[in-house]
Length: 111
Image (cartoon, rainbow, N blue to C red; front, side):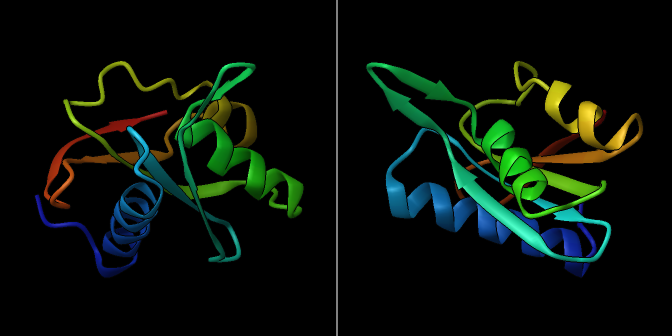
């Protein structure tokens, strides 16, 4: 599956964030104004936040009113990635691309 150039940017941001931090997962979202937000999974003894949830939280805290698309980079097929935060902000139908650590899209889902 070849993503559009804008969706490929989300995969690139997710991948770079994951690599830079050494996290298990990286994610990025694009809001309705075209702004992007990237985040890595947080795994501290007192705090755990999924990468996609954190990217959505960053969008919300910046005033985003909705999302156009999202991407997650991780090992595996992404079937265990929760879309609840995406749905809370943007409703149903937001596409999520799932890519492996090399940036190859291995799946897609909708919120």
